[in-house]
Amino acid sequence: MCTYQQLARPKSRGMSLVGLIFVLGILAVLVVLASKIAPTVIEYMSIKKAITSVKLLNSNSASEIQSAFNKQADVGYITSITGRDLIIEKSETGLEIGFFYTKKIPLVGPASLLLEYQGSTAKNSQPQKKQE
Image (cartoon, rainbow, N blue to C red):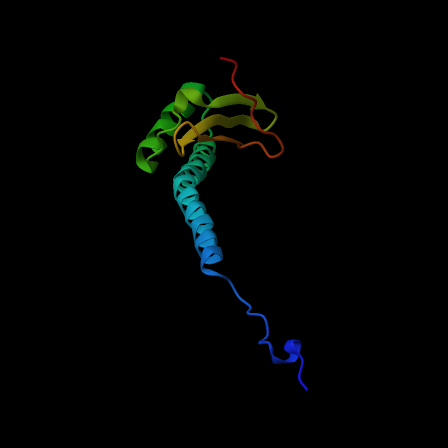
Protein backbone atom coordinates (compact mmCIF):
# COMPACT_ATOMS: atom_id res chain seq x y z
CA MET A 1 0.00 0.00 0.00
CA CYS A 2 1.29 3.49 -0.90
CA THR A 3 1.45 6.24 1.66
CA TYR A 4 0.29 9.80 1.11
CA GLN A 5 3.88 11.08 0.86
CA GLN A 6 4.64 8.63 -1.91
CA LEU A 7 1.58 9.70 -3.90
CA ALA A 8 2.01 13.45 -3.36
CA ARG A 9 3.69 15.37 -6.12
CA PRO A 10 7.11 16.82 -5.41
CA LYS A 11 7.11 20.41 -4.17
CA SER A 12 7.23 23.01 -6.94
CA ARG A 13 10.43 24.91 -7.41
CA GLY A 14 11.02 28.31 -8.91
CA MET A 15 9.82 31.82 -8.40
CA SER A 16 6.22 32.81 -7.82
CA LEU A 17 4.58 35.68 -9.66
CA VAL A 18 4.86 37.89 -6.57
CA GLY A 19 8.57 37.08 -6.29
CA LEU A 20 9.09 37.87 -9.98
CA ILE A 21 7.32 41.23 -9.65
CA PHE A 22 9.42 42.05 -6.57
CA VAL A 23 12.69 41.22 -8.36
CA LEU A 24 11.66 43.21 -11.44
CA GLY A 25 10.79 46.18 -9.20
CA ILE A 26 14.22 46.08 -7.56
CA LEU A 27 15.89 45.86 -10.98
CA ALA A 28 13.84 48.82 -12.25
CA VAL A 29 14.92 50.95 -9.28
CA LEU A 30 18.57 50.03 -9.88
CA VAL A 31 18.32 50.87 -13.60
CA VAL A 32 16.76 54.28 -12.87
CA LEU A 33 19.42 55.00 -10.24
CA ALA A 34 22.21 54.01 -12.63
CA SER A 35 20.75 56.19 -15.38
CA LYS A 36 20.83 59.20 -13.03
CA ILE A 37 24.35 58.53 -11.73
CA ALA A 38 26.04 57.66 -15.06
CA PRO A 39 26.09 61.24 -16.48
CA THR A 40 27.76 62.57 -13.32
CA VAL A 41 30.43 59.87 -13.45
CA ILE A 42 31.09 60.64 -17.13
CA GLU A 43 31.41 64.35 -16.29
CA TYR A 44 33.81 63.51 -13.44
CA MET A 45 36.01 61.52 -15.80
CA SER A 46 35.94 64.45 -18.27
CA ILE A 47 37.08 66.82 -15.52
CA LYS A 48 39.96 64.51 -14.56
CA LYS A 49 41.00 64.29 -18.22
CA ALA A 50 40.77 68.08 -18.59
CA ILE A 51 42.95 68.88 -15.57
CA THR A 52 45.51 66.32 -16.72
CA SER A 53 45.72 67.92 -20.17
CA VAL A 54 45.87 71.42 -18.64
CA LYS A 55 48.77 70.37 -16.42
CA LEU A 56 50.70 69.17 -19.48
CA LEU A 57 50.65 72.76 -20.82
CA ASN A 58 53.21 73.66 -18.11
CA SER A 59 51.60 77.01 -17.34
CA ASN A 60 53.14 78.97 -14.50
CA SER A 61 50.19 81.12 -13.47
CA ALA A 62 46.87 80.17 -11.95
CA SER A 63 44.96 82.43 -14.34
CA GLU A 64 46.43 80.63 -17.37
CA ILE A 65 45.47 77.27 -15.88
CA GLN A 66 41.94 78.49 -15.13
CA SER A 67 41.54 79.89 -18.63
CA ALA A 68 42.81 76.67 -20.24
CA PHE A 69 40.46 74.61 -18.07
CA ASN A 70 37.50 76.82 -19.01
CA LYS A 71 38.26 76.19 -22.69
CA GLN A 72 38.43 72.45 -22.04
CA ALA A 73 35.18 72.66 -20.07
CA ASP A 74 33.39 74.36 -22.97
CA VAL A 75 34.50 71.66 -25.38
CA GLY A 76 33.85 68.79 -22.95
CA TYR A 77 30.40 69.95 -21.75
CA ILE A 78 31.62 70.30 -18.17
CA THR A 79 29.07 72.34 -16.21
CA SER A 80 29.68 71.35 -12.58
CA ILE A 81 32.86 73.37 -12.01
CA THR A 82 34.74 76.23 -13.63
CA GLY A 83 38.37 77.28 -13.64
CA ARG A 84 37.79 79.39 -10.53
CA ASP A 85 36.77 76.24 -8.61
CA LEU A 86 40.11 74.53 -9.23
CA ILE A 87 42.53 74.10 -6.33
CA ILE A 88 45.98 75.04 -7.65
CA GLU A 89 48.96 74.34 -5.39
CA LYS A 90 52.72 74.47 -5.87
CA SER A 91 54.76 71.33 -5.25
CA GLU A 92 58.28 70.04 -5.94
CA THR A 93 57.22 68.81 -9.38
CA GLY A 94 55.46 72.05 -10.34
CA LEU A 95 51.86 73.10 -10.04
CA GLU A 96 49.30 70.51 -8.96
CA ILE A 97 45.68 70.97 -9.96
CA GLY A 98 42.82 69.56 -7.92
CA PHE A 99 39.08 69.89 -7.57
CA PHE A 100 36.28 69.01 -5.18
CA TYR A 101 32.56 69.32 -5.85
CA THR A 102 29.26 67.77 -4.87
CA LYS A 103 26.38 66.75 -7.07
CA LYS A 104 22.85 66.43 -5.67
CA ILE A 105 20.54 64.10 -7.58
CA PRO A 106 16.83 64.26 -6.68
CA LEU A 107 15.26 60.81 -6.41
CA VAL A 108 11.68 60.68 -5.09
CA GLY A 109 9.96 63.41 -3.10
CA PRO A 110 12.28 64.70 -0.39
CA ALA A 111 14.85 61.94 -0.97
CA SER A 112 17.98 62.79 -2.91
CA LEU A 113 21.42 61.35 -3.49
CA LEU A 114 24.51 63.45 -2.71
CA LEU A 115 27.70 62.50 -4.56
CA GLU A 116 31.06 64.03 -3.65
CA TYR A 117 33.68 64.05 -6.38
CA GLN A 118 37.33 64.97 -5.93
CA GLY A 119 40.48 64.54 -7.94
CA SER A 120 43.97 65.85 -8.39
CA THR A 121 46.95 65.65 -10.71
CA ALA A 122 49.15 64.83 -7.70
CA LYS A 123 50.11 61.18 -7.39
CA ASN A 124 49.30 60.46 -3.75
CA SER A 125 47.05 63.21 -2.48
CA GLN A 126 43.52 64.43 -2.87
CA PRO A 127 42.51 68.08 -2.53
CA GLN A 128 40.82 69.26 0.62
CA LYS A 129 37.42 70.95 0.60
CA LYS A 130 37.56 74.68 0.14
CA GLN A 131 36.41 76.55 3.21
CA GLU A 132 33.31 78.52 2.29
